[in-house]
Length: 407
Ligand SMILES: Cc1cc2nc3c(=O)[nH]c(=O)nc-3n(C[C@H](O)[C@H](O)[C@H](O)COP(=O)(O)OP(=O)(O)OC[C@H]3O[C@@H](n4cnc5c(N)ncnc54)[C@H](O)[C@@H]3O)c2cc1C
Image 1 (cartoon, rainbow, N blue to C red):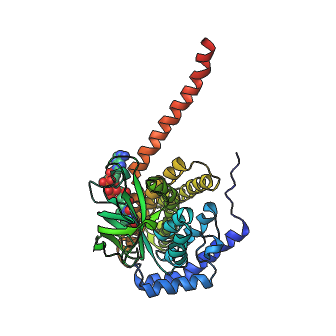
Image 2 (image 1 turned 180 degrees about the horizontal axis):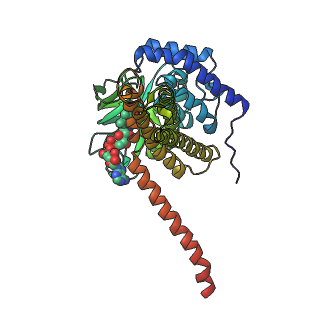
Image 3 (image 1 turned 90 degrees about the vertical axis):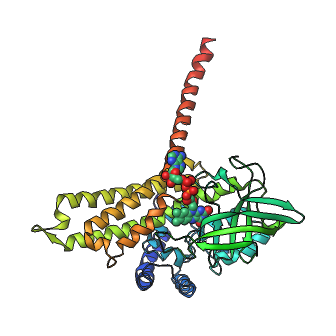
């Protein structure tokens, strides 16, 4: 099978335009906010500017006002948007809205599309995705899901607590995973519900304080208490929530990789600029062997992450099984991005730690990526299990003819 990863001219132009847009429009705003989440007015204004530059919503289909890129074509555009902490928000490709739009596009019925997807695609509203619960609830293992949705006449009653729900403050609606059958620990029995944040049974209890600050709407703890929703709040079919979560998670973890690779590249650019200017021991820092090693390791990590992301995108675009390739890409990229930013801080010395350069903020912003969208250990565990299963299958196939022949 041949794999073509080269984008066509239209996509290359779009990626270049995105890079220009980020340099000229977004980075000055990031400088003003210090990288913290922008106000609602700043978000809307950035999105207006993105529209006028022709770079808004590259991932959405044209009937939703987007540019219709497949996963492979998104890679370069998202990476260039991710060069600024605010770039993804400007293009309306930030988490969790981007992943939620993808999920709604695949699963929502016509009314739900009109009511939730159309305004989300246009950037008129924001959303959140509520799956994780405080221990002992759903986390790395979603089957531990404890939030329940109980059948009542004409609808459902949702009860439970969710935390680390990114973007919840100010969101118009939540996609909530709740258990409609089985018990915590069971592999099935989850359903997705569309819950308006104005619902009196949905309470924003607090912002969880975290090391990162750039996510609009923070990371919130939500309580669903006697939260009554009608039948048409069910997204897709009852008890198929874990399947739909997979529809969202594989592409969403790749787009996270793309965006954070943009920040890693910016960290490397800052380190390169610094190490060519800074003189130490009679030489440029960039010409000292151990600095060269860090610079080279950064280049290798960037190239390897890019390659793995594109490989997994290819699997998704061609309808293949992307479970293994997207886990590999996620586990590698999350660790690589961390290494790249950390090495860049080291190359810049005390400046890297200071607030005078954006590197210390980048370090704080990228650290959680090793935990969300599946911690590295969960992915490695899944990758190893698949490898063992695949090997067992190959061995069984090899044995089969031999046994047939001996009969
Ligand atoms: C900044 C941020 C934003 C988030 N946003 C959202 C959101 O919008 N919506 C949402 O629903 N959730 C969100 N999450 C939650 C995230 O998905 C969970 O944190 C993640 O799934 C891990 O679950 P947990 O925190 O409960 O850790 P636990 O499940 O308690 O895991 C703890 C640790 O166990 C280790 N581990 C896991 N699996 C294995 C294994 N198989 N073998 C060995 N060790 C293992 C890992 O090191 C892991 O970090 C967010 C988290 C963060 C940090």
